[in-house]
Image 1 (cartoon, rainbow, N blue to C red):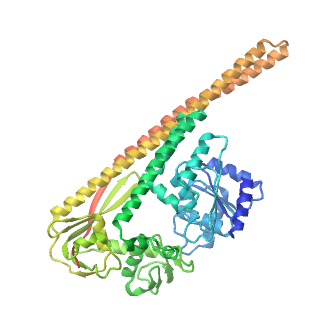
Image 2 (image 1 turned 90 degrees about the vertical axis):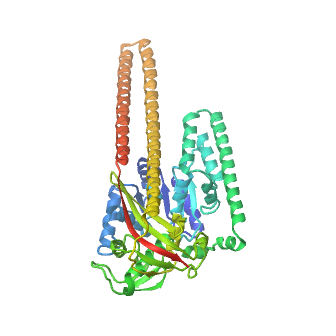
Length: 546
């Protein structure tokens, strides 16, 4: 590890980057091992750990210092988990040199100030590798990201896994290049991971491993090539030249692009703040007066990933929460909304056939609760006056158009057809949740059985090894010539028998632990089955598209 970091940091310096590295590993035990290794190396200063709990003294000290530094500001969200993540990332950015992270660091954090990724444990799931590298290879990164992968060259299966990830999936040739197309062609990273695990479980000899991986590579080649060919053919057949040219978005335009949720948040903010704020562009605003109670500061607000010189505006910010709460609590009587396709900048082909038509639209909130988890779904149901049905995507697109409100209306929408659409969507959602929970149960059960089998085989192998050592020790004691040698032999036999008995007890305890975990898994699934659901109509409107 020390040698690899020295070489990688040298490469990063050649590219003009700072000496910062994110090291990924799959377990807390390996994370602690790497910390001990680096603590006795030239890289001992500036190490920060990142995992699911961060209960170590180092993380606690960083968190306490961060809280004191940002006390009374909107950087503190009030959620210990979110603030701990922010504290560790800030420390890594400002003072740290090496972050050692478990899989918890592969999602939800932005490390564009770091350009060195080390995969100490290389996952079999290619999408998880993409997520890891994507922590650094994102908007704001000024250098090429260097990726270092640790590989056991004595393990033929490990070599073939890396070969597939590197050559077939092209993971390390450009994270947002060819690999995106390839990963979109395979069914799922989890499916690929299960197939690799199956090879590890079944194959023991070098020839068996080679045959199994050759077959997997052949299947993947056919699957990837066929899907990519079909996608390109559809693109050429269904899009005209102008659209294909516009798909080639240049780099600067893509960097300035606001994602869908940011645009929706800014639109809602513009509407709810009214004359209390000025909006110089689509990604920032200046709050001159606050219409909400509480300690919400005035001044410039901007979305994440912008200049960094203003209040960071996001859904978790108190101002955004107040705006969303105000909008959600507003009573909306039925009204007519005339949407103008002509005023929309761009083309929405799904709406072309519905121009100069009118009808009714409802939006409903479907909530599902199980254990301590709640899921919310929005159902859009829309029909024309002639009884034709608009799909949900088309209805959502129509709501994004500029429009004028006329009303309120003194009549309500016809219920039968709209209610039938909502009930159909509700049934589909419940079925999807049930199927997802079934897949979750299957995956967890497979993991549990695999772990139990590995543990059992390992302990049985150790017990057999102790049996062999005991037999050899007895033979040696039998042929010993002196009393001292015989006594020493008997002591060795007793010690070996004691260790063998410990392993037998460990085997029984492990089996009990497996049974306990299986019961906990069944309890979780039973809790997911005990669902409470509610359906609430948020608003209804009569629409007209011109």
